[in-house]
Length: 158
Length: 276
Ligand SMILES: Cc1cc2nc3c(=O)[nH]c(=O)nc-3n(C[C@H](O)[C@H](O)[C@H](O)COP(=O)(O)OP(=O)(O)OC[C@H]3O[C@@H](n4cnc5c(N)ncnc54)[C@H](O)[C@@H]3O)c2cc1C
Ligand code: FES
Ligand code: FES
Image 1 (cartoon, helix red, strand yellow):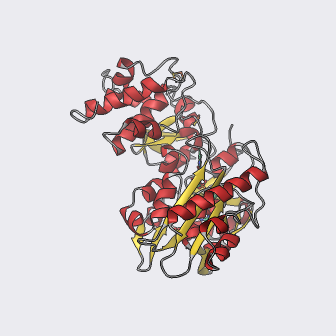
Image 2 (image 1 turned 180 degrees about the vertical axis):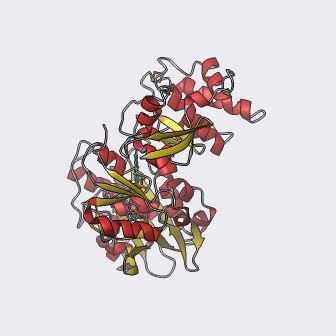
Image 3 (image 1 turned 45 degrees about the horizontal axis):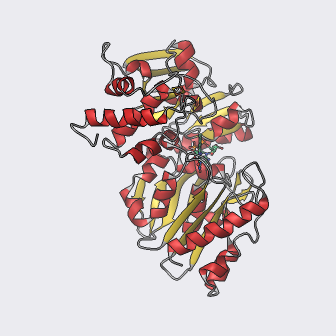
């Protein structure tokens, strides 16, 4: 079947099998391998992307379900080589160790700040409940998100 | 894990979805958010041959004031329930319970209709529907019918919906100002309930309805607790009966006895919080 969607601002069209998972379409057909597969059972959040600006787990969606939507992956976050403030904050606050969970964390965290621009630490922890870090660097991940919130809300709580 | 090969039809309307279900019979499955069905298809525990995608039927996503009840479109996401000012005011248990489902990414995609039609005894929203005394509207080739929550869940992952019926709307009686509580017991934030208890003290003299999560093959009302309360029992005495008439599952999280204990403790907490 033919599916059309916008990925990182570009219109894409592809002939896929209806059973194709969105994450496989993104990685294997589009070659955007920043989106990782961790658990493959919707638990870890490594595959988190945005559908129309809201976080979603791309291992638990068919490519067909994204037809007509606006998809953003980690590759679409930086602007012409300038890191997104969330990426910058992860770098500055040491929010990553091995980096495997990081694309998903950044996508979940930016979706969270869109809904709650000035979260408390507890709200950040709860907002990221669907994203697991095997390196267990949660402390610095939370710090990164709070720091990004400060940057993007003109003097937020941090 | 990759689902088995399947055909895919995108329904442009509720009627088109019903026509596709009628045409393909038992082979077809509706696809809403896919957050129950796709995991099952990846494990090949479900192998429908045709998916009828209703996920983008925007006109089935709404939360409206229906007079004595709140009318919720079946395709409304958990996120929309959680953030609805109307629900927070008039059926607060629905908004709160939606906020307890999975994690934010799951709540962006999963729908109320999908959660109720899936009928998983471990899921949260069926218990909220039962405790609220709500109902669902099912639409099929011969028109619409209303199914009360107490008749919706018929067996493990089975509901009273026929294979060619689409759930279009969920109706929650207004419980403005009434006491309510949802007690979800799990070990990690995003997990399913090991046991849960929902209570709504109805304002109109109907007494308090208590529903249990993961205490048997279906989401269920606790009739033992309900009748003890209407007979004048104290919250403590009624809660002591919470495991009566249940058949809790046994798994790594706990055996039947542990779940029975949890049910009594959680129902007591729920009744106390709901002010019964
Ligand atoms: C990681 C993860 C964690 C989760 N945690 C929880 C949790 O803690 N608590 C909880 O309650 N749930 C949890 N869920 C399940 C979640 O709530 C699902 O969204 C919900 O169960 C199904 O909704 P859906 O729209 O995704 O339905 P789908 O998966 O699309 O459909 C489910 C079933 O319902 C049928 N169906 C769907 N819509 C209709 C309709 N309108 N009419 C008739 N039949 C229909 C489908 O044919 C299918 O059989 C979790 C899911 C995931 C992936
Ligand atoms: S790979 Fe999708 S949630 Fe883990
Ligand atoms: S940084 Fe290694 S998994 Fe999170």
